[in-house]
Length: 431
Ligand SMILES: Cc1cc2nc3c(=O)[nH]c(=O)nc-3n(C[C@H](O)[C@H](O)[C@H](O)COP(=O)(O)OP(=O)(O)OC[C@H]3O[C@@H](n4cnc5c(N)ncnc54)[C@H](O)[C@@H]3O)c2cc1C
Image 1 (cartoon, rainbow, N blue to C red):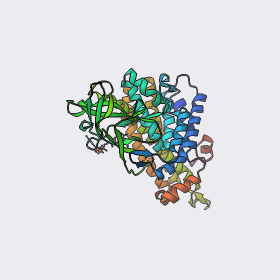
Image 2: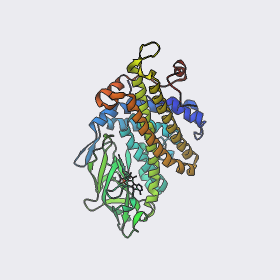
Image 3: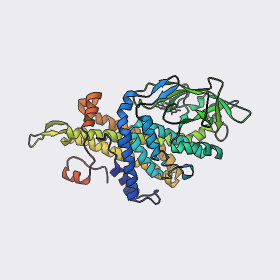
Image 4: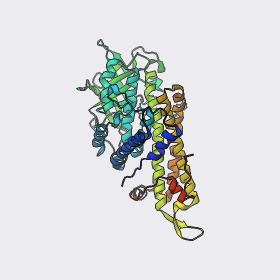
């Protein structure tokens, strides 16, 4: 049985009832539900089953190459073949041209089913959006079709050991060549899917400093630095190690070295010294997606808590004296209701940002972007912490807790009929 149950009913409720289908063009409710259900099958049937094994195994580094966890390569191929990588992109580059209002719930499912896997398309989406917004016509034609189909994936190379939040400290160098290209040298850390075996090419978007550039953030330029130039010739860049993180082990977080043998070939995006401005397209895209990850992980914790609370028998009914499942205790109901309310609030907030993207209301998007990122991820901390409380001691055990609970998973979505028959159990987050 699947461990992840796509929350189609709740997603559809927000899209069609709260936002009244705004921003969705010709899509009617039947089509919306059909698309969400198909995505849900991929999330629960293809990605969720390799989440736990992927986390246990992790991505493996060897001599500059990164082997992803068992099943990831095959799942990515199937995911791309189904057209799921191209959902929000423009038709002229092979995209499906679906609105962000659809792309967000779909992306939420990838993140909830398997966040390690979902990070690859997340970064690629941001990179493709950045090339679309700031690249030349030739760059768009060269890179976007393959990044949209998923044959190639994109990355974001900002961080260096001395330049985290403070990107003005970036030291990676870019030296202009007579043919107009640049030679890139330097080291980047924490690069998500900087190296892996799921795609034929990796298109790195790299922040670097040209010669004589002004100090600080005003002297940073943006470069396209492909792993294979024109899809064939190996560029001078390599993954020198992977970070050993506390979670999402299947997502390779890479230290990337550029130019160990003279310099990696890079292609300037837009104008020199405007790189940070361009990169904000990518960072904002990533910030909204990270907020969505908060919603996804919180929903997964909610699902597991409800499942566990319905199975775990502890304590008695105060009137009959009969032993009961813990979901019948008022305080457990309080925790689950709180979690459900928070998840729905976060989901609605994130989808509202998607709606404004579709409507071109950039001021609202700018306002909501940091709120979606910070509130939804903070909310996920609270919900996942409460989820551990629902599990009691089992919440602290890796093996006996989460694993057994998954195996006993039962359908849990709260339909109105269920709520009517068990009035004590749940108050819907829906108005
Ligand atoms: C799993 C993972 C994946 C990542 N993927 C990528 C990627 O694909 N590409 C990439 O380029 N980077 C990536 N990063 C790096 C990430 O962008 C940085 O971690 C982030 O920018 C913060 O930098 P830092 O870790 O150096 O923290 P620091 O900048 O050292 O910050 C430490 C603390 O100080 C606070 N702080 C710093 N400056 C200020 C200030 N001026 N005012 C108030 N508080 C401040 C911060 O909020 C934080 O709490 C990834 C990181 C992780 C963990």
